[in-house]
Image (cartoon, rainbow, N blue to C red; front, side, top):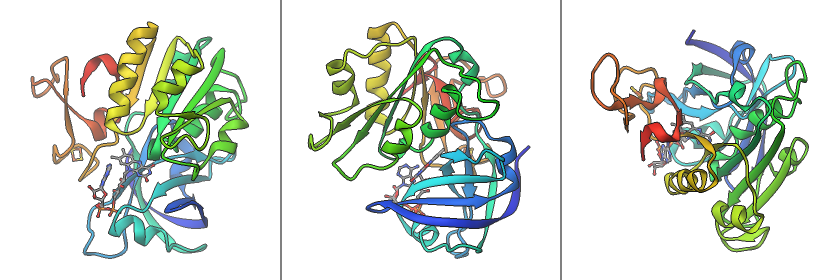
Length: 266
Ligand SMILES: Cc1cc2nc3c(=O)[nH]c(=O)nc-3n(C[C@H](O)[C@H](O)[C@H](O)COP(=O)(O)OP(=O)(O)OC[C@H]3O[C@@H](n4cnc5c(N)ncnc54)[C@H](O)[C@@H]3O)c2cc1C
Ligand code: FES
């Protein structure tokens, strides 16, 4: 059930240029699926709406959650000044999350780019048996991460849980190019792909999955307003009709952000 809760900042550090990692003690951590997100309220009342940020990971005790975010504007810049002990209001837990159970016994590829990288960390942990009851869910997990340059973040943390392949646009680390180039260069194949990142990357993931004959799930981190299904500010086109409105639309904030790649028109 969605609720607005008072939570407490445990720590904050800058991981890379303009990329911050924020641990928050919150009751919301008790019931989080990889790929879900929270709305973080700025305290500045001129920025009314909560900012959607994916949950990067939760601690083993499920008492705290971690957000990794890039400073983009007023809201996220304010968050980057939050210090230990500060109160912060969160709305959550929001969205559907990745279908972890579908990965049972499968060769799974996690593909992420830029600020789509953080939500894949909890997913990698759970699929590889490093979270919850410690049961390995996937047969194998390969993580393909795309960055602009050598200013990478979370790479070493992913390496604790899975094989990691890197692509950088300037070629400073790993394959020069994008995640598609790294997959072709490494001849990486799998049964199922889970992905989060910018729209051009997600379109490429759809084609990569089709070439590979793999099933793909993509997380659409589009702009949002209310975050709870009320304003229709986040609709995307789907191949099937919504049961209530009878139109080919879905609300990313409530029906997503994770969709079967075959079912959305991107
Ligand atoms: C489901 C979901 C999960 C997200 N998870 C993360 C995350 O884990 N880490 C993270 O850094 N960001 C994430 N985002 C993006 C994040 O919500 C925005 O960067 C943030 O709301 C910007 O708020 P602001 O007040 O700082 O900037 P604003 O002043 O609102 O905007 C500043 C700039 O950021 C751009 N922007 C705003 N929202 C988005 C967006 N959704 N995608 C791309 N550009 C945007 C605007 O076009 C503008 O150029 C997520 C978004 C969604 C919808
Ligand atoms: S953001 Fe309001 S309906 Fe999705």
